[in-house]
Image 1 (spheres, rainbow, N blue to C red):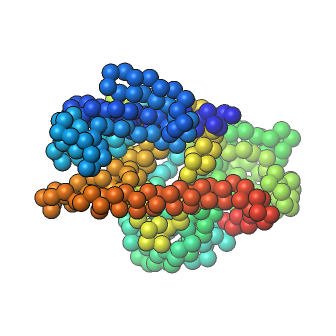
Image 2 (cartoon, rainbow, N blue to C red; image 1 turned 45 degrees about the horizontal axis):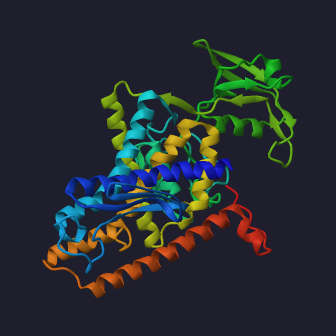
Amino acid sequence: MLTILAFVLVVGTLVVVHEFGHFLAARFIGVRVETFSIGFPPNIYRRRVGDTEWTIGLLPLGGYVKMAGDAPGQGGSDPAELQNRTRGERLAILFAGPAMNFVLAVAILSGLFYFGMERRVGLSDPPVVSYVAEGSPASVAGVRAGDRIVAIAGEPVPDWRTAMEQIIVRPDQEVVFAVERAGTPTQFPVTVASVGPDAMGYAGIGPPAPPIINAVKPGSPAEAAGIRPDDLIVRVDDIRVGSTNEVAAFVRSAGTREISLGIERAGREIVVPVTPQLAENPEGGEASPQVGVYFRLPFRTVRAESIPDALREAVAETARWGSLTVGQLGRVVRGQGSPRQFSGPIGIAQASGDAIRRGPTEVLLLMAILSLSLGVLNLLPIPVLDGGQIAVLLVESAARRDLSLGVRKGLMVAGAAFMLLVFVLVIYLDLSKTGLLGSTFGASPPPPPTP
């Protein structure tokens, strides 16, 4: 029930904002709005205020604004009818919906940046590899710790965030990593793996997570050695380390022999001997050597110093997300990306439920991402969407004449059929991610690939 309520809250808000953009622009220009609907019929609420009937539909999968004279070939000479306004005015009304979604995304992100938002440590650092997972695609290709990644698939990567974005959107593809090793440029073809139900690209590298101790397990070798919370592990057996993965790999390779940990505590470094013990793996499988520490999650709270700074950060983040969305859509169309990275109603409902359980910040962040995605998707040149109608108006403006009624109707039918096909596809992908599809047809879903 919480998941359903979260879905209605998140999607309903985005729909209201989008359609309210069309509504405000239409009223400002002088077009009469006959219906403002949240959701689709059958209607569970209906009320008329002035010229507009406000309704709430039982199916919360969208909404619409019905304007007077919006159907070509119908209506009269009333200037309050949409088809009697100039093409420029109609374009402004169509653009207003997606524009409101972009404004909402910027507004939410501005608030999050101003009041504080957790972000991954190291994303803005240069992509110098500190650790390569054993047996990972990057390891197999020859990438090593110390390599400085310069470009991925021909795209420059100035920081870890850009590098990870380029990897995530290219599952099951051979991608060229251009790196600098000891000042010498070289290239490695890396076959990026696909992991998880969302088919995210995985190469086995990432920004370092500082090995700061968050907690020590009672009765563990670490407790016996005197290791404390807030200690930072900087060396293992005199070898410099900079991430939790490196420390874990050293402990695994050491087995049950004694190792020395160089620990930074209160501004000075001390050396602590500790002997790992075999312990059960909480994720199953064989027992593994462990010292009994829990590392601090690699996140920190980021706050903008002023409202203008928060706004600048939000605009930059929105532009970056928008570029990623458009780029991934293009890759999917060209057959170079996975459509599984996009979510339909089921995936959005699950994400909404998860976000509301984690707290209001996560809900707001999800709304910002979805609002931006809704704005971008509505600008696609598909006839039933705002972008398709915008494209028609631009063609008519270039030709200096209206398209025939038959052509317009044909475009709308084709667009509706295409969107129905897309809807069926995303539902299928959503079901396949949850495993319901396999169980429904008596088949077991395939196991996820091993990273």
